[in-house]
Image 1: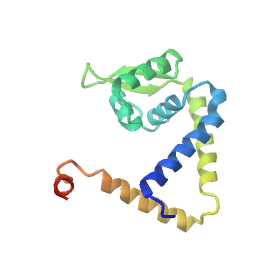
Image 2: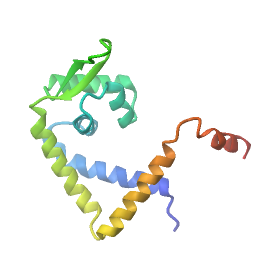
Image 3: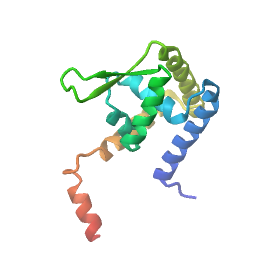
Length: 153
């Protein structure tokens, strides 16, 4: 049976999230919340809109989630130094042990997913996936010929 790459990569991501949710359930946070915390940990000062983009959800959904994380004292909003209308998101000191635990679980899941792969295979797979992501991250003007082809094709 031929594997569709889109379905396969989506299924792998779904299974990894499911495994992560099982391992982190005892921490008392939801899957989207732990993903938001890891995004903020990797991108200190990110905006709520930036988190929404990473999570592929509407900004209002992210706003409510950040409200809950702020109430739990895991995240704080700080005014952007150059734009007083904008807020930057930062982890609180209380969130650091939780994020460390999340990173440990993420490493365990990644190790499980990569079991049986050589270092060379993982390097090749990673490089190929990065190239695919870069191809799909083209600016809208770069995609104009693809849209025209799809409309006429």
